[in-house]
Length: 496
Image (cartoon, rainbow, N blue to C red; front, side, top):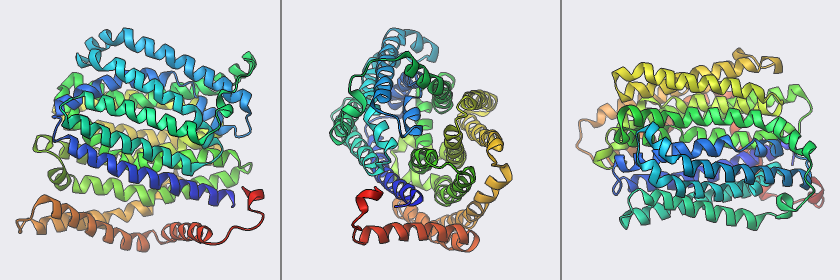
């Protein structure tokens, strides 16, 4: 299989598994709102902000280094494992002893209660980073997708059961622990432990090489995580745990397209681009990936914002009605995030990891700055600041790609037609919603009709307005399906 087809197949596998598992997770989230009010969920999210900050700050960029260096041997991966596990242990100690200070800073006493168990969950999950790094490096994307599905299905079932049994916020904590444990067991089963834990003599030269590459990535990841999590800290401190619970629900929905598509593209393209020596081929691949991604992500993002009111009415408990205005306010998030993820992956392969730290530092400043500036008009207005910040950040990331031959105009031209195809879709959904006001139908059937009409209109408008990229996606899918149905050639092993 060619590298391009292998990357496309990997993207479809990981995205398919991601979308399927996340649908289950979202359904479980809707069910959880029947048992856990917004303030209870907000208490757990406040603790997660604290834990994830130190968890991300200590990842040292090991996973990215291994993915970007596919020919590294077991001695290198063992050094990475030592760095990951050692830094993770330090992070857990800091979380445990620093939870009282964090509770005071966030004005959220729940941090003291939930942080230790969430730190344990993180460390178990961190152990799974080691075998997952190997799967990504070797482009074994089917197993990456299956691992994600196992974890998300486990989390969904566990949280619902324990919430139903009356465990309150602990249901979310227990769900994280069980998901981390089963995901780790799956990854250990499908990989060879020697690939990442076979003892080798430790070398400072190897450690230094990993750290030289990975520390800037780790700093950038920390800032990027801060841009996605510290808004929760701002929300809980400024408006309380109830508003945080509503905002976090909206953010998780708005971020779904970027998480399910954008991040999967990054997982696939980093090792793919790392195998390409031709800079022009990389450039063409980036712009093609941007077009395909926009064709998939943009209608999902715009659609969520348009159907927000009916969707929340149909799926959430009445106490969560406030999710709808938040969701509409930040629906643009996935469009910006997905483009940023794609461009960031290109920078990563180009070895310009230090740029990440600068870009993501300014992203954190913009997110918190715009949230603070808009907060005088209330929590929903404050949330709009998040979308504004991520949109401006994309401009800065693309500007950073100029030395690689990528211009803002080329990226804009690659995504503008998929975006324009979303306009008829949004208009049709608003029109059908207005028409449905004249009938007394429940919210469930109404949201199904809105989504169905929007999807049909988008397919038609995409084939008309974004004809070239639409057929490119169709041809890619057909090629992968044809290969799956055809018998393997006798020299298949040589091509693997």
